[in-house]
Image (tube, rainbow, N blue to C red; front, side):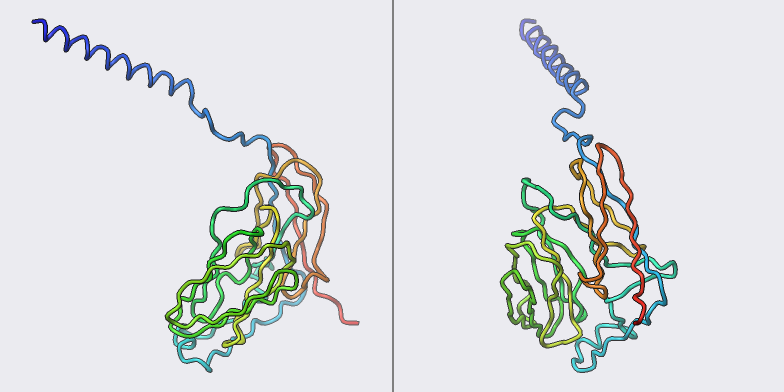
Length: 254
């Protein structure tokens, strides 16, 4: 009888403890979660105005591995616009941001697949790790054409599948090429903050967690370069989605 009494008391104690923890969890739902109401977002769309140039097919015949990696023609990614004139692969970023937060911990990936750099356009923070992959059964040579950061130039035979890189200085978009396959090119933006984006297939972009304030925002497209990039002023408010659209207009011939 005495043992049964002790077991009963222990069972009551355990049940009470569980109920107490559950009660605390219910009252503390969301405790420790980050406050999402101290920053705003920038959203928008990028379009093109003018006669759309035809996409040029890439000539991959020089390397049988490259040609056999695709069915049909492979088109250049330097200017991708859909039927509604939405522009893909446009870099959008904030200028002169006073950022003292952490470096992006996620590794950015630049892959060589089908003898094409993927993604074609990317943005990273300075000192962020960049993993360069070779998914092809052929030799590639990775040659960065940076003007501010130190250039690198190294071979990746088919047996070398990964190499790490990083950039320690802020730099406007520059390209990385393959010296073996001259059609291969990727563009990289390096910033000291995380407030950047690349437009998707529909020309849309989104940048979150921006501190309130007034900023200049830049839109850059490969064919227009920095000389004809678009710069606009925006004001970001707490918990508000600010919309800023851009339109690249085909230059008129002089």
